Length: 561
Image (cartoon, rainbow, N blue to C red; front, side, top):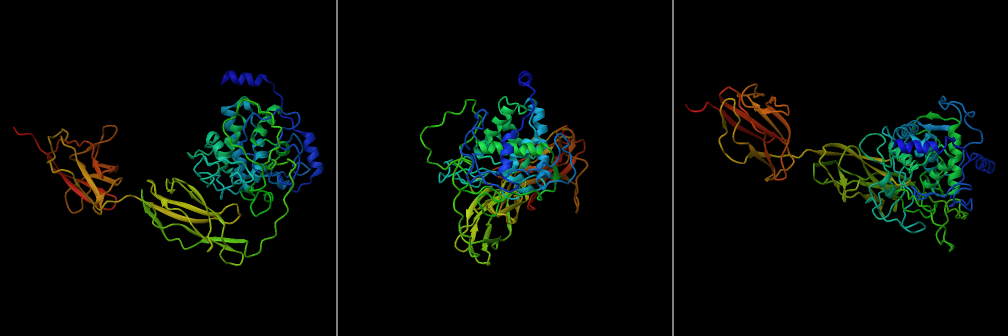
């Protein structure tokens, strides 16, 4: 790493130069309002910017749709002034708190692991603005996860490249084809290589802004790039989405954010108009070019373009003609709400399937049922529960009666509560939350597997081990929690302070053991038991989750003369 660091620094300490001419040209032709990538544009949109080196990486986003609205003509602050501004100034310069924190944290992380890259957080902010409008204006929870998935179009070959499912629908809810996912719009195959855990929760979630920002930073820093060098920065941006217009737009926002930003509350950021119409600012199908699969950057340059015409739709800014606007939907065709369709209590024992299934109803603006509404069911929280097939997210469409039922929910081994959220895919409507509870496995009976007498001399260990078997309604009860306690005699037994004992990891005597569990065959063999110097008959009590109990006698007696 040290040798590479030195080599990269010797390449030059040139600071990032902003594409001023391109920005000025764009600013002169467009005001602060939004202009969409789908509405024509640069005829060379899928080619590198003039003077830049062609991208040497596959596109991280699959060249999904992106916003081409530009910053205001007036920068939020004068050049070379502090970026630590108060909450004043242009609304466009405000970045939601969690989103801004994620970008800055990613910059600090890369400074520690790849300092020679010199990643500026403003570059992540520029890409986040263009890809998702800063996670839809900062609509994220306390952990930085978007309240609803931000999904690109289905890559099913119908107007887009054919990218078959690579994640079993885990990230994009589609087990047939892939879609770009999250605030930084990674396609699942790219995320599989570049995904990061930016918030330290043990997961790599493309829908989490901390994870996505750190992954984007690593992707931009791939190879030996030094992002303080203009040519390297151009190559990094083009590797993210290989489009001339995309590069110019990201460069514009990069320069704008470098001149000054301020923090705004989560959920209050400026949200660009939806791409290609609709109600949600996430990318809509039908407004982008054919995405390409993604993976690790390829050190080889891109091949020369084929001289044959490409029958697929052109990329953003590629000179394509905007489609004619569709007729305005009637109230009977407009989605008004998504609600719980009578789902009962969601409770299951660890390892079992939930008997109740989650059901959702979509209603139009008149309150009637609405068919063919895409609904995404997502499991959230600290749980290993999954839908059938091991999925954490599933997307289905409502039927003629406006309802749709989620697949069977399978409980894992983690007990406690978690949440399943149902949202209208790609719509800005509140999610419908469902609370599910996983209870511990239970046993209604427990007994020894043999009837050997358990004896030991004072100060010695018991020669025979104690083995028990738990059952529930006559069937083997596996994975059941068991507590073993040496108890006193009497009507209200408590833990005994003398007599037989177990040993902890440090060899100290203990007379209560927890966190014991029966095996797959319902049996449990206890650790070795030791006797102290006091003779007599003692009792060992074993209690299962579910209340089953067995009491076993232990005799400590001096050996015969």
